[in-house]
Image (cartoon, rainbow, N blue to C red; front, side, top):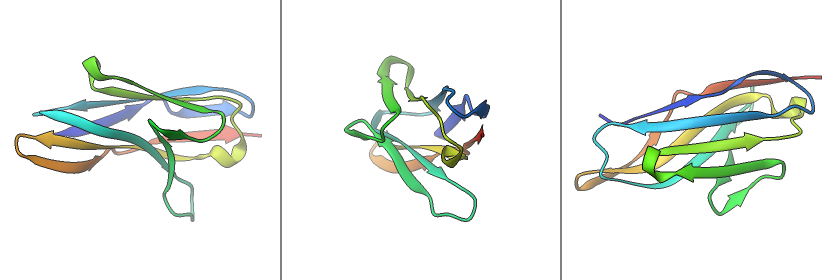
Length: 110
């Protein structure tokens, strides 16, 4: 069974920074896209970052040897408050599936 586990969320003041991590584990053959999404209360889930496209103030990076993707978030604003989810296309043997993590809460206070 494959799973993604996010960490690094928390409470931060406006203007601060956080670094989120997401580790994939399990019976993994290959990992293709690893992306970050977020969902604020009462809003739809939205894409935050892919390797080829990232929102301003954010940086995404990967450590393929560790099956890990990071999201560095700088100059955080209260509107960045959301649950942040990691998502990846992961191959297990012959099958590739889109896997989601459980999410990590980011709260930015004003």
